[in-house]
Each structure stands twice: as C-alpha cells, then as structure tokens.
Image 1 (cartoon, one colour):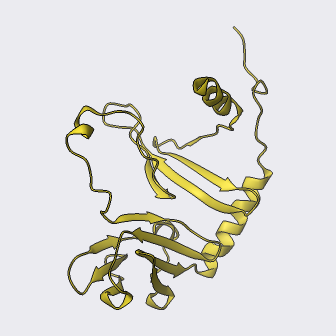
Image 2 (tube, helix red, strand yellow; image 1 turned 45 degrees about the vertical axis):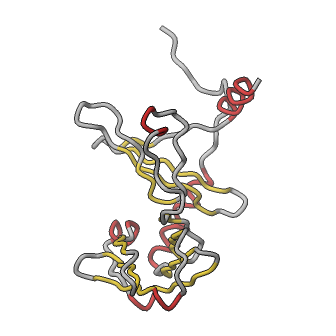
Length: 193
C-alpha cells in the first residue's frame, strides 16, 4: 500500500534538471507560495563518468534511507552539532543545531583573504569555516558588518545580510523560474522510432 502511494507521489512530482557542458548538474526547489528557495544541490560526474553524490548547498540534507551493514555497529551521535544553510529573502542563514553553550561563548568573524566566515567558541568546543558560494560566484567581497548571530533552543543562527547585487540577481532568477511551466505526466513530447 505504501509503495503505491510513494509511486503515485513520484509520478505526480515535477522532474527537471539543468546539465552544463562541464558535467555539473544543479537542482533547485522553490516554495511557490512564499517564493523562497528550499533546496539547492549540485553534483558532477565522477572519475568513472558516473554521477557523483549530491552536495547540498542550501537546505537540509535528506537522511539516507538505504540500510547499511555498518550502521548497526557504528553510528554518528545524534547530539553532534548539525550545520545547515536555510536562506530567507533578505539574508543567507546558517543553523547549527545541538550547540548548548550561551551566546557569549560564540565568536564569528570574516576572513577576506580566504573568502570565508569562521565560527568558533571561546571554550574551543566548536570550530567551523564556511564560505558564501553566492558571493563567490558573483565575485563580491565579504562584509563583516553584514554578519550577525543569535542563539536559542540549543541552535545558533548565523545570518549574513544579502547585498543589493544578490537581491537583484535573485529577483531576476525568480522571475525566470516563474516563467517556467511544469509538465504533467504524459505531456512530454517523445519521438518514436
């Protein structure tokens, strides 16, 4: 019964892909009611010309549902910090779950030479270097005044205010996405031999 509903869900979903000549593939998911980007992921060809794994740039990674023999023996602790990006219309947002320390312990800085942000704790329990791929692609500099953070419910939320160039670019991209029309099952034009 669950297989049939899963199959029906898969058939009802819209499937699209954009493949560059260099073998890179990007997939994005948007919430059309709020116009927010939910997921952006990339993958490229592996060394053996097969498809490599998806690298999540924005959104929460999907937990693997494939059973693994080693998963019964060795398993990642569920209380380890989880780092993920979730953007809003005006800010790039990173969430780090499972960080129980008070707000005063965290220090966030910008390293312009390395084009990255560094998150560290005074008690040396957590350290993370992360970049802003959108700024790198647009070749825009990092601005430390655009960086801010807050902490609540064991979750550290780091925000970076989007520059006006990025906001303009995203507005244009969203306009292009809204022009796209999804296809229903059976609407694909297939050539027969």
